Image (tube, rainbow, N blue to C red; front, side, top):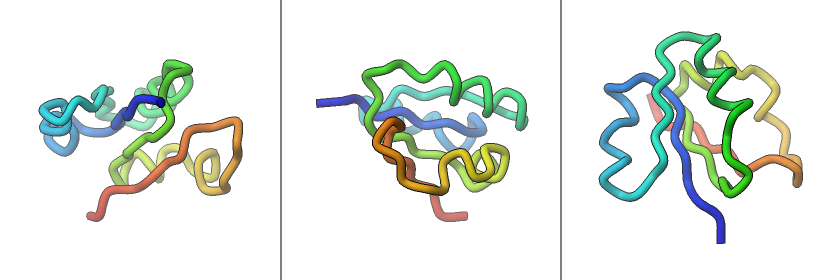
Length: 75
């Protein structure tokens, strides 16, 4: 079983740590892309903020078995 990670602004994702989510704070697009590139191989689900999803662009839009499942938080 894999782990869950969240990528985005501190104010949007930090509370998820209370549920055991690995929180990756990324306040700007370059930080979001760096957090995505450095995700541990154990991550099977990534929660991203709408801003993080925009920074990632199509990289997470299409399902791909080589990547973790990605969901976007509501605005």
